Image (cartoon, rainbow, N blue to C red; front, side, top):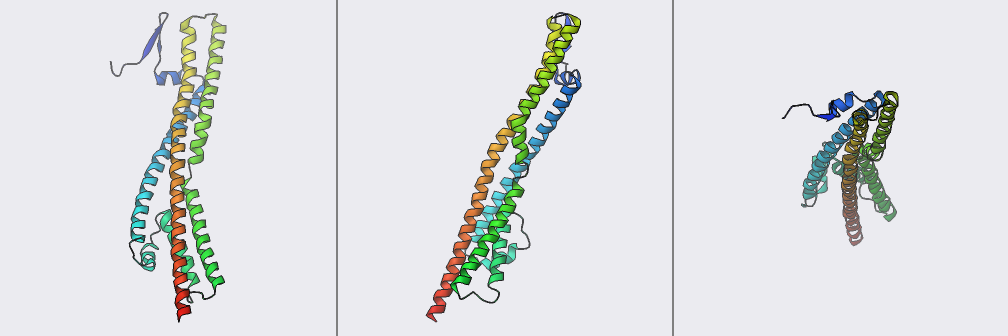
Length: 246
């Protein structure tokens, strides 16, 4: 019946086998292990939900911005519209490139090819630095997921080994090897391993999924930088052709 406490009858002894009872009846060391694993699991899920919502939001914004960028609207007008609302990495990358570009052409487009090449390099460098900074911010929490995924099973195993040692001690002290004496301690010990797997499996899956998603988003920013640099190069080339024709 729903709500009833789960119990197992072992050799005439009713033993509570619910998760709460297994936790409360465990040794203090095993309890600390379980609490650490529960905390790691909760924190991993918070990172997973946060990363998922963040990436969905950033990709939607990037789609809207790229539609505007390729709509034929002058870059200066786009920059004026978004420079005060640098809400995501792509906008910040674009704004960093435009900031460097406008600083380089404040006195007019450079006439010498060496100065034009230097301007292109500064724009690309400014955008690359911004991408690196933004990707570092987006990758926060990924190290925690990787650490939980790799260490949680071993932490749970430590709790299990400790619990089994306590079970053997109970057997030695009571001189009783019946299932009623052995099973509860073994169950409490194995519960720590179960919690380790519960914490590790979502963390590993989340890390793999979001690593791929972040790599794709980083590649998208790099591709945008290349496209932006190509547009500026065409603009510089057209200015040079016009100057020579004049």
